[in-house]
Image (tube, rainbow, N blue to C red; front, side, top):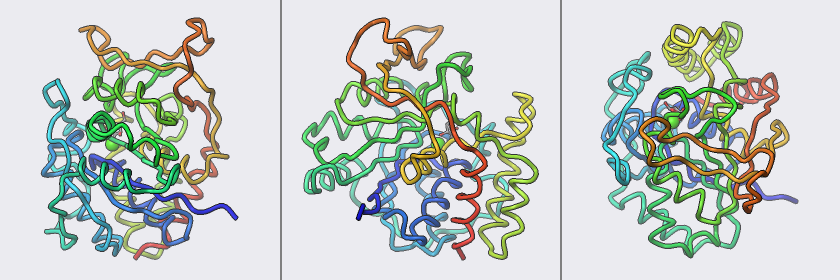
Length: 317
Ligand code: BDR
Ligand code: CA
């Protein structure tokens, strides 16, 4: 019998992060994943909002027992770039927000990651970072021995065949902290990357949002409201029919890898160039002959993905 993945979600909520966390909590109710903790990072909005939002999302899902940790409040080297134009000032535009009941842990997210991974069984924990990689890079560089416990790091970030969303060549997560992304990619840990190449094939539509709204629970309506506010930006700016649902794709990969296709490749991240900082360079045809360091995902069964998402959200209050 295969055991269910034990997962830590490293996140910067963020509207699609909220969708990813609610999805993961629904999968936990379905006994398909075990969420150990949420570790927060500055990204879509500053750290005090991302930690507060993570705690609010735990309240919504009645998961006040999930520990929430605050991590890095800025990237390793660069100045923080945020995305309020997409996610709103609070990061969770579209729904009313309350003072969270879920406590904020006092330990720093990076020290929690290090302590947890150091004592965990080999290959037992899946990390699912869906924001800038600052916390993960710090943990892996401060304590490389942590890698032994990592079953897989499923990263939402990067883009290669698809154009960028924050610059012409970079996705937001790699652009905000390219130095962290580089450290993680060079760490030797088992890595899967969920880039824009695949998330742009997992787009919302009126029907998909309505399926959530039609659920008889509060979180179905709530997520539909968040996503309706979220996709407005992408549809206006990129002319897409519905916004790509980035972060939930990473959660889906960790639990349902059979929905995805990709290829083992060598990937690196540009850290220096003014023109292409944060761009992920993928050696798709192995022309450099360098050792492959990641599984790069580029295909998704989007119908099945949205069906699993809706089913998982249905298990929430
Ligand atoms: C990523 O950027 C953020 O705005 C989203 O939450 C997602 O993690 C996509 O590039
Ligand atoms: Ca995110």
